[in-house]
Image 1 (cartoon, rainbow, N blue to C red):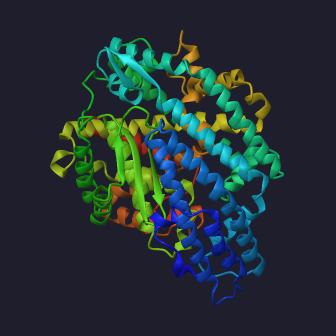
Image 2 (cartoon, rainbow, N blue to C red):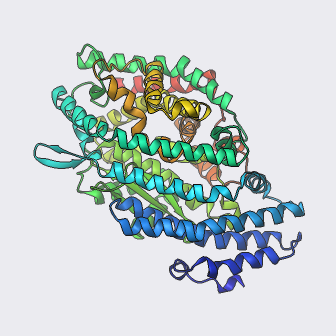
Length: 568
């Protein structure tokens, strides 16, 4: 029967009525040791067609947030196809689990399937559709934000280069202009937040769980660490990374010859040099082709993967009005291809973002060597090791002599900035994660957005005391509104911190033997979701950890390397 499945374009026009017989066929199949793997792979083939259709519709809503027709198509498919598919797929989960069959190599998949079956509630399907709709509302709101700068309308991302300007007055003017524009949307964002939170409280209640954190922990398949471990990680960051971040801020303050580090000073070059300009904002071809050269230096196979993405138009990197914020890499499961979305404006952060998303894309390519079903459910924590490690593994090839963007001095500067930002990131990650831990264990308090403002400001003072918000306290308290993960992808942030710690270990190995470290990295990516999280880290040459000792070792390596780069 599965030979009758059409190509993706035709399948994308199918209704649930046309798709349902394939689920009924799977449901009617008598399972045995001899056919269970084929059954799983047929099921995966069907899901990949559905998933890619859904993802392509979702991507369209981010490419142009003002395209109402694209939003309507996305929401209609979500409601009319994806919702009944989730219900039918739950029936298949229960069918397989009832057999107690244990095909070798599918242990992790079956473990995750059990949790999915336990969490499933028919009543939550409509709530999930509504949650996705709210996500498109957030994108639309943020994507429409613009400011007038010297007579020109500019998007918020396109203002980033002015935060790097050597002139402090220019930086402050740009920062305040953007901040005031963002603050103007606070009431609308507050209203959206209450809808998100109310929805998530109901999802947890329907699943018979005490709070949404308990729900999300299980839905995210977090078997290898607990909320208490996250709090221990926060404490380790406060003990190790916060003092290191304060050292960075203090060094920059002295170099800039200013009294305190204000928010508009954080991104400025401490020696008042002009911003690194790896490519013109309008020259996305240079970003693409130079990044390709870098990836080829890291590994020929990885470089060829990126070339495939360029050739097949799997990159949308420029910034424009009404484009959704941020950057991401998603997967087109049926086509077996990744897709990268960015908002590049011609600064070094764009290079880092593309290296990062490139790591995700390479993970997708490598895992496609597995049987269809085993490609699923890769832990997000390890997906971020793939991306963050690539930023570090590619660093030696940023120089023009290696095919990269910069002179030797500029490349050293870029590496210093990246390494210091790695340290500065851990405290910020702790703010975002601790905020969400509070929100979903105190949801009634968090429904009052004034309380959210207060909690965010309190956490920022705890983890980022080196930034002075005197006189602009409202802008500090507003920070949670601008973190899309808080609105759209709850609890997706601690992964970055855990993965960054793993990535620094991968990079530490590369400092001793780059080729071997890259080989281990690729081997780990190729495991997909077939191993528990600690084993995936281990395969890449890292320890899955959140303790102060491991973090301290990573911070020491970064600070030592920064010192060496500064001397050179």
